[in-house]
Amino acid sequence: MKTRHDFEHMDAHDPLRSLKKQFVLPPATIYLDGNSLGAMPFDAVERSRQVVEDEWGVGLIRSWNDAHWIELPTRIGDKIATLIGAGKGEVVVADSTSLNLYKVLSAAIRLAPQGRKLIVSERENFPTDLYMAQSLARQHGFTLQLFDSPEELSDLINNELAVLMLTQVNYRSGLIHDMQTLTAQVHAAGALTVWDLCHSAGAIPVDLLGANADFAVGCGYKYLNGGPGAPAFVWVNPRHADKFWQPLSGWLGHEAPFAFTTDYQPAPGIRRYICGTPPVISLATLECGVDTLLAAEKFGGMVALRHKSLELSSAFIDLVDTRLAEFGVRVQSPRDPALRGSQVSLSIEGERDGETYAVMQALIARGVIGDYRAGAPNLLRFGFTPLYLGFAEVWDAVEHLYQVLQGEEWKQGRFHKQGAVT
Ligand SMILES: Cc1ncc(COP(=O)(O)O)c(C=O)c1O
Image 1 (cartoon, rainbow, N blue to C red):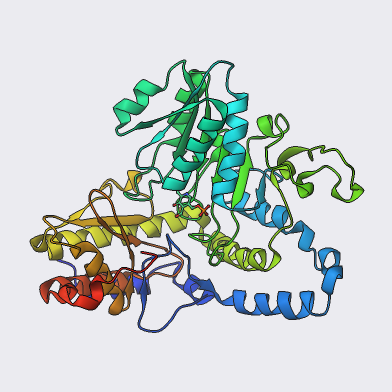
Image 2 (cartoon, rainbow, N blue to C red):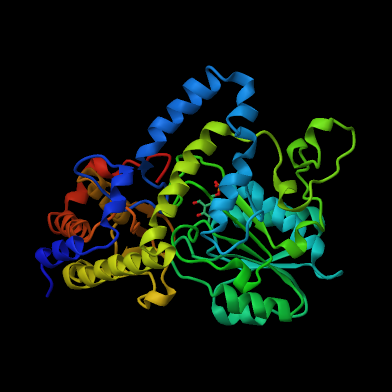
C-alpha cells in the first residue's frame, strides 16, 4: 500500500506543480470544490483594483475604448475557444449559463426539421438546464423527455427528435457523455445537439469542432476560475451562427449598436449572442481565471492537466476503497478514468439521518472543502483541479474523512444546520 511519503514524492515530480503559485489559497485548507467555485487567481486582486481604481475611477466612460472594455466578451471568448476546441471568433462571454441555454435552445428548436417537437435530456442533468427547456417547451409546444439510461437515450435518438440537450460531464456522478458519438448519432437522425460544458471547460479536453457539435454553453466560475457569478460563455457552430436571431435581441448583439437605429439587425456570427452591457469587473477577473489555464500551455495544456486530474482522482478512489469502505463509503463516479470528469462523488451506504450532509460539514470544519449534493443517493462531491491541487493533499483529505467517520464527529449538532447553499 502507498504511504504519504509516496504522495509527497509524486508532488515533487509533478511537472505542473509550479502552476499553483498563480492562486491565493487560505492556509490549512485543502480545496476540493473547484468544480463549484474555482480558487482565486493571484492576479485577480491587482486586476480588479486596476479596473476599479484606474479604469473606472480615472478613465471613466473613456475606458470602454481606451481600456478596451467593449472587446472583453470577444477577447475572453477567443481565449476560452482554445480550451474547448472552437475557433477564433466563435465564442462570446455573456450573461449566465441559464440565459445562454435559453438562447441556444431557442435557436436549436427553430433550426430542427419542421414538425419535430421533441427535446431530450437526462433526468440527472443540472436542474437549470431542465427548467429552461421546460419553459421553452411550454412556449413553443414542444415536449421535454428525460432518459435514465444509455439504452433509453439511444431509443430516443430517432426521427422524432428535434434537439438533444446534454451536460457533457454530469454534475452528480462526473460521468462523461461521448460528445463525438452522440453528436454523430443525433445528426444521422436529422436533429441537433446542445452541450452544457459547465463541468468540462478547463476540466477535460473538449473538441467542439472535431465533434461537429451544434451549440454549447458553459460557466466561468468553476474550472475557469473566473470568480463568484462570473459570466458564462456561448458557442455556436459557424454553420448555424448567422441563421437565427436569438430571442434576447439586445442592443449589443446588434450589427451597429451605436447607430441607435429603431430596428434590430443582428450582428454577423456569434456577436449576436451578446445581449446587453457586459459586466466589466466580473469579466476582468474571469480573464485572470482563464489565463491560469492558458499558463498550462507550456506544460502540455489541457492534455497535461487532464493527465494529472485523473492521477489525482484515481489516487483518491484507491484511498477511499482501502480506508473508507468499512464505513459504507461507496464511489459513485465512473471507475474507468476515460469516463470520469474531474470530480469524484461518494455516497454512504445505509446513511443515518442527515449523515452525508453532516459529514461534509465536519470535513469542511477540518479545512477540507468539498460539497454536498442531495439526491438519490445523497453525495459527498469532490473536485480535483490539477492547477492547484497536490497529491499529498489528496492523502490528507482522505485521512480527515477517515477521522470524521471513525470519531463520529459528524454527529455533533452544529454539523446538521443547513445553510441556504450546500
Ligand atoms: C451543468 C450546469 N449547468 C448550469 C449551472 C448553473 O447555471 P447558472 O450559471 O446560470 O447559474 C450549473 C451550476 O452548477 C451546472 O452545474
